[in-house]
Amino acid sequence: IVSKTTNVKFQCQYNNLKGNYDSVYWYLQRTNQRLTYIYHTFQGTVESERYQLSVDRKLSSSTLTVKQVQPRDRAVYYCCGNTGGANRLTFGKGTQLIVQPSIKDPDPTVYQLRNSKSRNTVCLFTDFDSNTSVSLQLTKDSEMFVSKNTVLDMKSMDSKSNGALAWSNKTDFTCKSAFTQNIFFPSSGE
Image 1: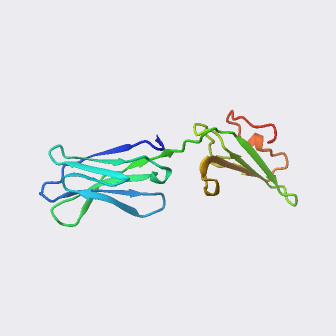
Image 2: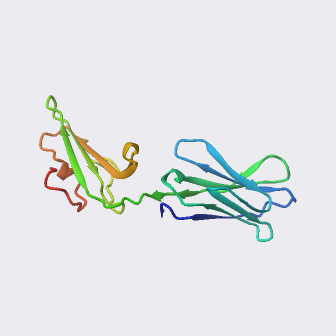
């Protein structure tokens, strides 16, 4: 878990590359997506604006640097080797990169929406600090649900915010009762 705008290095040790042209490959896989090729080389360093890959054959190791990490870099990163010219890749277990957004000047706010024709209430909790954890909860009678916190990308304002949802069909449900993690609630929210 890292904050955005830092560089992250992944190390990979291998023992199966013996031939002169056996290469080390790096891939990433975002949630619910296919593998994405990053780079490969058999020796030395290759670099782009986003990545730097180095392979040291004497030490049987490879390092992938992701530069100035952004939320879009959240993925599982895989190192793999191509041995013996067989076009067969041997993958490692992968390392997950989680990028914490840096929310500047958090100002927690709760919005409560209630449908006048039904008993359903939906609450949106936004702009809380990145270190605040909102846990996933489902009551045993399934009348209240609280989501995990997620990052809301507000492209029209070119900013990001933390957010979480809660909803219920109980008449006595309030947004304040849904978020009980010692979080500040403004007086305008319930």
